[in-house]
Image 1 (cartoon, rainbow, N blue to C red):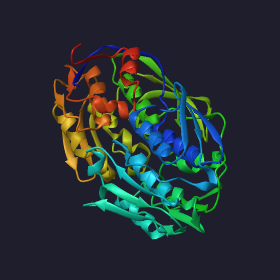
Image 2 (tube, rainbow, N blue to C red):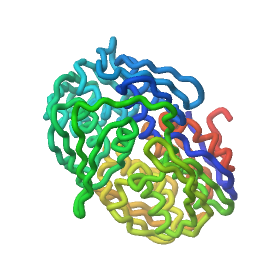
Image 3 (tube, rainbow, N blue to C red):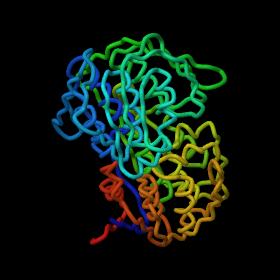
Length: 443
C-alpha cells in the first residue's frame, strides 16, 4: 500500500513511546528460558516481536496474550527448549533471528530458521562464527544466509572480540554463554546497546561489565546460571520510535510535542545528542523506571538547525535513527557529514543507498560515502519534496520519508508502507495525534 504525507504548519501533542523493540525481544526470550511464570507489560506488539513470541512457543515455552501489550510467559527453566515441530519463521527481524541463534545454541535441539525475502538476504555469519567456536552447529544457505539449521548442545565458553560494533553479535554470544561451560567473555570494539546485560540482571543473572579507557566494555557471563521469572516486568519506550515524533516537531513551523516513557540509556540516545548539537530545542525530564532501564519524557520545540559533522563515536548509539537524522540534516543550514556507519549496508536494506535515494528524489543534494553520506541542507521549510520514495522493504526509510513530507514544500510519497507494522504499529495514529496529514491508498 502506498501513502503520502502532506505539508502541515503545526505539530503538537503528547504520545507515549511504543515499547522498545530491542527490549521487547529480550523480555520474551528471557522469560521463555526462565524458571517460572513471568508477566510482561508494555510489550511492542509489532510483527517482529510477535514472531519471536511464536518462536519461543514453538520451542516449548507457554505464551499467552492477556491484554494490550500484556503477556504471560511460562519459561522452560532448567529442562531447556524442546525441538520445534516445524520451521521457525522470523519474518523481517534480524534481531529475533540472530539473538535466538545464540539462545537456541545452548539447548539440545535442532531448529530451522527462516525469514522473509529481506531477512533472507542479510548476513548471519558474523553471529554464527563465534557460536560455532562455542560448539553450535549451523548450516546456512549460500553466503551465510537464511534458511539456517541450528543444532545446539553442550557448549564451551570463549573469549571473543567482534570485529564490528554489534549488539546483536554480543548478545547472541552472551545468551549462548548462559548454558556454556566456563566464563564467556566479549571484548567490544565500541560500546553498543546493553539491553541484554541489563535485562539478564533483572532476571537474576550475574553479568560482569568492565569499562575500558580505550575500546568498548568487556562483558563476561558465567555459564550454568538459571534465570528467575519476573512478575510485572515492564518494557520501556523506544528511542528509535520517539525520534520520529521528535524530528517531525523539530522541522515543523510551530507547535510543541512530548514523548513519554522513553528509555534513557546512553547506548541508545545518540540521536538526541546529535540533534542538540544541531541546535535542537529539546529537554529531557525524569519519567520513571522499567525492567533494568530508566525512562524519561522528551519535550521538543520547532528549531532552526545547522549542519554538523557527526562524531563517529555517536553512530552505534543511533544506528537505527540515521535515516531520520538524514531528514533533519535536509532541513538544516549547511552540510552534515556522517561516517563510521558501514553497518547501515546490512540492515533491512542497504540503508546508505536508501537514505541517499530518499533525499535525492525529494530535491536534496546528497553524496554517498562508503560508510555514510554528506547532506547539503536546505534550511527550514526548504526541502522541495514531491518525490516517490522506494521503501525497499525498510520500515525506517518509509517512516522517515513520511516525516519529511510533513515539512516539505510538496507532499512526499512512499511506494509501500506495509512493513511499518513490524516495528511501530501505532505510527500512523501517533502522526495523526500530533497533527500530521497522511493519506493512504484509497483514502
